[in-house]
Image (cartoon, rainbow, N blue to C red; front, top):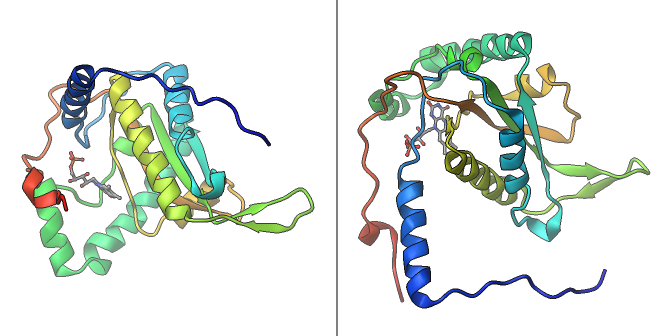
Length: 218
Ligand SMILES: Cc1cc2nc3c(=O)[nH]c(=O)nc-3n(C[C@H](O)[C@H](O)[C@H](O)COP(=O)(O)O)c2cc1C
């Protein structure tokens, strides 16, 4: 593989200031939504967003991810059933008192109706190793970092497209690999319901840390 000219467009500083502020304003409106409408969404919008996610950087360009889009009602129902079984255990036994106290402000419990209501569930899988044609395993590098970045791109792209998402992590998530028949090298990373918000959906009133708290210049 050789090298090619970088496709780079330079903007004036004034333009960069305005572009960065516009993007900040847009991204600041993203919220995790837990009440979905069942309104349908054209799949090409979802596919574009997945391609944006797949444009992310990854350790040694291994692209150790797989995005499974679940649209089928029966499969969504199976996922809900399995997730609620794990979540019931989590809320009743597995979660520590501190964890439950931290979750209190979100009003969440073991019930996950959005897993059936949202038109799509995007299940992000991380590929902990690669299987080559000769059946040999090849190492992937910085898998969590890479898939985390790609998932961030995905959430940003879906928000930019005008859709809402929930970043969901039923724990443990092994049932997703089983229901979706994924190979052994893939582990479920995130379960992301996507769609329009329910009519008059509400979100918790939370605050983000101030810029001073999260940023340091040396
Ligand atoms: C890795 C990760 C896992 C999360 N898991 C859940 C989850 O299982 N259930 C849920 O309701 N929200 C979950 N969330 C959403 C967070 O609660 C939410 O992002 C946070 O409260 C901030 O709210 P915001 O996304 O509206 O800014 C998760 C978020 C992240 C990044």
